[in-house]
Length: 275
Ligand SMILES: NC(=O)C1=CN([C@@H]2O[C@H](COP(=O)(O)OP(=O)(O)OC[C@H]3O[C@@H](n4cnc5c(N)ncnc54)[C@H](OP(=O)(O)O)[C@@H]3O)[C@@H](O)[C@H]2O)C=CC1
Ligand SMILES: O=C(O)[C@@H]1CCC=N1
Image (cartoon, rainbow, N blue to C red):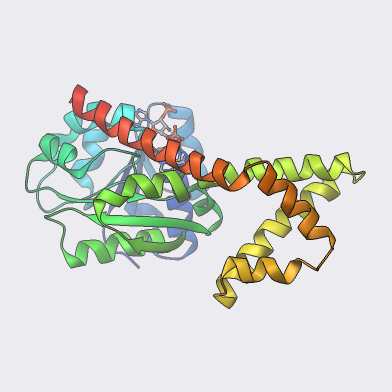
């Protein structure tokens, strides 16, 4: 159980996933969580559902908190940092989930000694299956990293990476759920095309993605080896794979991750230009 009071500035999708995970894992008490936002009705819903404290006042939340999670959109972050900077001191740990925004840019607003950990989680955190990478800033201690790791381990797996790799993480696992949902939707459409009822197709497509990932993780085998196990000589899978290769699926996925990584860098540059 974390003893700290944790404030989530901007209680949207990511913050809710983390709040839910922390409570479900028994890692935090509802009364030690404060969620902020702009809309009263959203905050009321969070209070009703999770029993957490809420406020429209970011500054008041930061004053009370030991750990501050910056969970607004990158475009809204600068304004929030300016708003709360006077209440941030070296006793508080700052955790950012904002895509693209560099630690140095946040330090510029919060003071050079600020203890910051920049992270990149993803939305499967909502069901405890997230993948999060964390990058500690210069002034964050080992204990800070342990606290942040504990928070994100409540909703999935964690990895520590150098900050210069976080945009790549954003392109791969941060944005990745969107790619996978598109693939599942497309596979379901394909199932319907070959005659399956929609519900059956969606169920089979989702379980195939889940099961394949689980098989890969549990066996530790190379994906190529597992692919070969599905692929009989002259069989059905190789016919499908040939079509995917002809359609450039690998290149398309590589291009997608590269484009999302580039976009994360752009968001960081835009933040630096404006701040
Ligand atoms: N969604 C994802 O897949 C991922 C998102 N992230 C990062 O997480 C962060 C949040 O994203 P996400 O949760 O999806 O976005 P949401 O839009 O769901 O949440 C952002 C929340 O911030 C609130 N907000 C906006 N301005 C302020 C303000 N000035 N003070 C307090 N609250 C404010 C919004 O309230 P209102 O609705 O009232 O405006 C909203 O509830 C982003 O920085 C994003 O880069 C990281 C990994 C994955
Ligand atoms: O699209 C976005 O900006 C966010 C960041 C990572 C995933 N979604």
